[in-house]
Length: 554
Image (cartoon, rainbow, N blue to C red; front, side, top):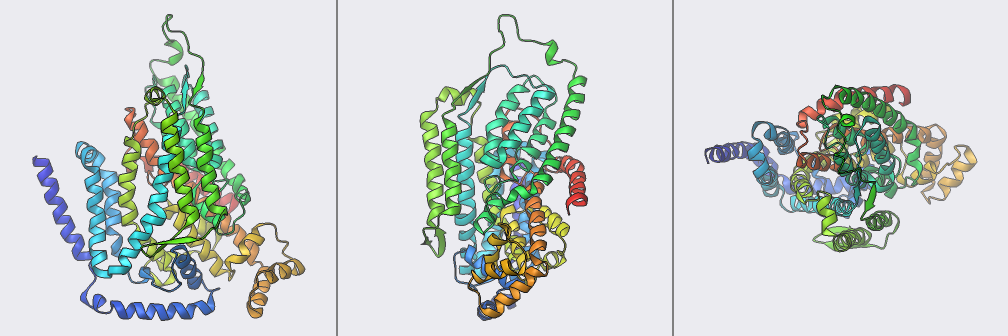
């Protein structure tokens, strides 16, 4: 009781302090409606110059929010210290499991709600309807589809059980991670991770040291493996929606292969060293004679049909555009609601069609997805100001980041670094449009450009004519493409795509399956590193490889 009382008092003190910081001064509140009117007029004027950087960001994000361009741009008004609750929830995830593990285990939902309220209450008080719209938007458009997809993949993959005697030797572990890496681009990093994490844990049940296996599993299966198709990782799917051809991301196959091959070599060497150092080797501890080795057998394989249904629903939402419906002012695509319905239906079918014994023997519980749902509900709330400031581009408090990005390697590192801590999908989209704006290219040219447009006068002119742009804008676009803007955009987009996917492996929150893999591992009593401890592994290993990728490709 004393710990709970002290913890409650500490939370109250922090809450009062942060509320005093986040609430805008009286002058800001007094000028709130005037500022909105000014922004609306500026947005209307910016429509006349849609090729500019700020217009590209604002027009695109207005479309993404399902509202008329220029309704508001809250990111240009929010102060930099409005991200304090986001930092607070990250530090809570990082520190509480170390300094108060029992408290965290029992009360992490309350801690998450606390930080969400620390941001939401003053935000709603200061910006009222706009704040409500922003919060509702991030949950309807981002969080609910995000958690529905995770739930569906978690539920369906939890019904697939690999029975049999599988010994976690370095060769077997490397093979399992390689298979997961290859699958990730076709069934998503979450699907591949949820499918193979339990078999690799069971294979290493008798190993003394297992943490490194899970860490490399996160590096490769939960992140880097998903870099080749829009099905692999959410930012690539956003690119697909905005004109990037489905197979274009194979352009970063060399980058992915370099990372994957080097990581697999490092893992095999490290796992071999640890294997040899362990006092009791599995090869010298065979099963009792009355318990012969069980042959490998796949159970619940019908769930692969449900996995296919989920992936089909995801792909459908990117290629079918039947219209939108209005939910409390948020325009939600019918294709997205259809996708979510398909995913839920596939999950229910899996629960109905799969034996409870199979799930029990697969050590299936709801705790990992429950933890992810709670924590990311708070993260998505607290991330609102950071994403809004990025969307505001040169007019936001994070303009120093946007303005510093010039070369492809800048895009690789900035997109990647932000993707390590923020949602990598909107980060990808922000820099996607930043690149288009800086090169004075409209979104309409993305698909023909990436589909193999020959950058010679006749072909470029024909492609631009098909866009139906005004004559002056068409002429300017032709000149830009022939002067090298097209090739530069392709180089930059490779950097953005690689950074958004690869750097997700840097932290537990960089990509959703990271947290789920960690939760499943800890549920099986595998001691995993803390938030910062994991970053020591990722920065120490991945950081060196990212530098190598930069030197070779960017």
